[in-house]
Length: 347
Image 1 (cartoon, rainbow, N blue to C red):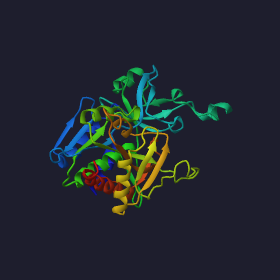
Image 2 (image 1 turned 120 degrees about the horizontal axis):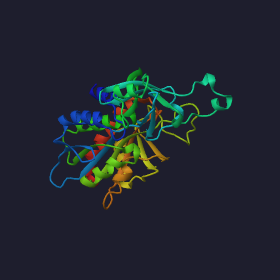
Image 3 (image 1 turned 135 degrees about the vertical axis):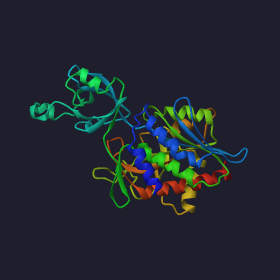
Image 4 (image 1 turned 90 degrees about the vertical axis):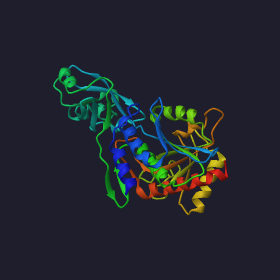
């Protein structure tokens, strides 16, 4: 299945925010057969354009290419790397993680280390070790050797996790936030054989550090409608109350009603719901999530853009490895394709 193969390649690629080169190359390659034009803007967003008839509504699909990660901050005289966090990362998930330091000479394997628990005082063992007390060990004996291995200040660091199937239609992998959105966007363009819209499929940069790529891309496109394709918290795990995170895996895509940055435009929200019901696509409604998506910035472009969000329920986002259901991904594609076909009737 091409959709799954694309997701695997995108998930395994390095794309820490601001260093999306590897993912950008894949998105360009995967989009090219299904659009009339592929271009890259000055900030690094990838824009694939499928042209409609003259004066057709302009639809912008946005899926961010970047992922959370780390950047090398300093190299100690002993050869250990201190790092800065890029994007929202909980310090609790960092200790002992295998990582890859992406140098000009190629990726280096490393481990995030700390003072060993065996020699910690009891008070220390009870506390979360903050990221500024952690370090990356690449096996260098000193600073000089680390530099000879290719390490430089500012090198991106990603988690060393590979895509894998773990059950029927269930997969785990790195950076599903938002490589699955990228995979959904590419598959959507593949299935849009003909459309009365001009569709802009945009792989955005730097979403995890302030929705930056979507801001500039939307200004250049100035679409009539914007739809962000992202992930959302699947709360169907122990310890999570339904009121905290009601979205569940295996129950279809989530349609965002409101989040911290966007109240979905009523016409877009109504369109997505009506299309889902008309095509018997199971869906879930979500509101109140403290995060936001590219749609928040697209909606504020120039004089304003009606926007909505369709998300794939995903467990353990913003951690080294996430989990999702491929059935949810497939249903998300079906919903987005059907919605685009209906847009000319409403906008």
